[in-house]
Length: 386
Image (cartoon, rainbow, N blue to C red; front, side, top):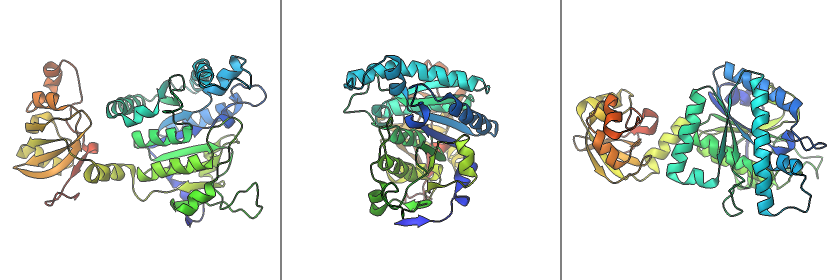
């Protein structure tokens, strides 16, 4: 079991994060007595989100609760548990959930947008890129995206089953620096704390070993579909993407302030940053589907840290879709690899063009870069990351 010590110092990933994903579980969001939104708690969190945004951070909420809200609104009985009944509840509850967030955040002067995702949206490359682009645009506009699983159309075979892993996939998708899993527990223990008074909180995890997975358990709440095991699985996804994860008790007002103030919680700390992890993935994992031959001016610009513009591309080879990896060659020598913003046909049409001519050539206004610098990795003479 690989653990560290102390939570106050470990809170730096949240304090210093530029992009944060916050996941709210149903047990926090829904008032047990009424089956409605826990508005007082949400108003407290909304104030903290406003503070994060005012500090220049970008925030995404991943929120459970649609099914629970919908079941109460539709006056469903405990016996109505078929998949189609859950989907019907989600359809009704999602309206209530979105309206609640819009109303609460409007009081803080924050605009919100609803984004519904399924597992296929993060595994199908085209849908992944579309979702990533939409979220990035919303964040750039200063909007708070509120993400939930699209339970209305998801089936038992393709749904995430819990929003912990959905939150991790969203964090991975947008290259977040920190994922906050607000729960009804204050972190991961070395034994079941409900069964052993000697159980100790694990404050910091730097590697998810078999021992860590073994102590995660499978405890569930009345409203949630996940447990500690799903939170550890989410942390694993984020660690591989260079994103820190914290599991903390959300049953308090201003739960984010409690984390940064040193309250008990468990941090999962990665060994690299999101950008470094992403570039390592591009350099060492993806198989290139095509090649771009560039001129000396473009090569010099790449070495200086710039993006690759269409004007510097001399020739396009291969058959590839938008978002796939391509090699970049200068004088026949591979100098870089990147994720291309256009498919092979479009890339060939705009090769050699100035960015201002892209719309006229393609009939729509795409990205001015054919490969953005964040999606590009320079390679050494042996084709390895330099």
